[in-house]
Length: 508
RNA sequence: GGCGGUAUCGUCUAGUGGCCUAGGACAGGGCCCUCUCACGGCUCAAACACGGGUUCGAUCCCCGUUACCGCUACCA
Image 1 (cartoon, rainbow, N blue to C red):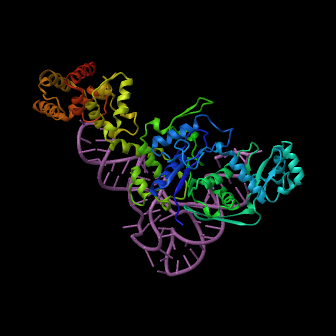
Image 2: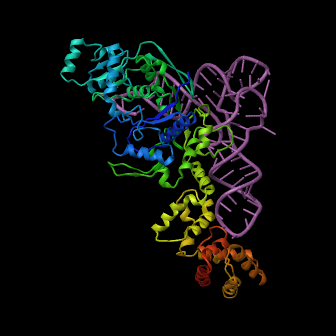
């Protein structure tokens, strides 16, 4: 019974694109690619109260940034559209009616007050609307056909509820967790159609997954509890044979505390939770994303993939293609994972240091341009080669290289003062006056040869001269090889900096 | 509360009855390299939740307890 692999990501356009959501996208994508299947993007916009303008485009942007674009969906189109649930409203109503006609669903006219009263009475923390209490309520099970028709004709608000079977066991197989079962007498009568005629998630997801011929459902573990309802719906609608395989993904948890990772946690602990910057159009609040924080999409995707999955070896760095090749559902971990930002940083660091500098060129050039600095590409590349291994985030590329492009604003005089003495002062004076102009070509290796040689000729340990030299050139105790720095600065600029700094060091 | 799920170092995890003296990675400590900071190399510390079974033998299988997570909306 091999069938064509068709998977979908079905977000509701309500806000930022969470890490967990991105990982769901990734696993969907990997599975589709691996099986030459199709990856569908469906927008679940059935809740008009939570709908947020711009969120749909934003979701698409996030997928694009990660290179995980769908084959089919709102943007690409396809044969199974429309791909926006708000455009499929009539469809759901038709199936709801079918269920009612079969006796598997019913109209319910209870007001919110009546519902609240009932819940209080049965002391339920859930809907309380179940097989044990539905006969006490105002619905098409308790009202005569005439009464029901009259209410509907009079425009009385109503919802359609699923009539949960009485004493059945529902079994289904989860690809990650194995066999799972529920007893229907523990489940309640969920709303299928809301009073505005829109379906709830439960109805919509089943109808759409069937109509779109979805073969595998990858979704968060939070859906596990409602899966029996969905399975029952597939059965009652007569689609049992087409039931997709379920794979409920472990949740991504808060780093320290308890519960699901939320945007709040990121704000509190200073790390992003969303893939890309998200600006709430109502409040105007901006939430930083991994992209803007300075993550490379490849690193972000790699980190996500390893959050709950591994290939069984000790390999940790995977390209997208490798992931496509090696991904497997049975290697997905069952337990939730606490998110560790340090680990995310490590992945990014790894990618930055191993990535050819040319990959950062356009980013870096734009950054320099913004600062009004213009430098030849080749030089930028050389400098990036020198410093990228000490960067975990893209902005650190600048933080670790600014001194190549502009003179230090101040020098760490304190840092050298302890070791600064007459001997060194004399040495640098002589170096500048007697030796500096002799260094040609002015290249790393040759600079080193000259400076070390000059020191040794004067009976000094060359190593001791290098730290002061470094501070003179860059302003502090940091950076790559001091000779490489000198070369990039050029003979004149290096000399100028040395003179300024030396005067500062000599002052006291 | 009910229902469902999960349980290995601080964190992400490997492990599918003997290869385990429980492996790797992040973070942390130390050492080496060294002109600083990194990179790299070496190294230290660090875990099978608990109690019963099953078995010649349990991290691994079964049961219970505990803990944690999720669901329990006309939200998804």
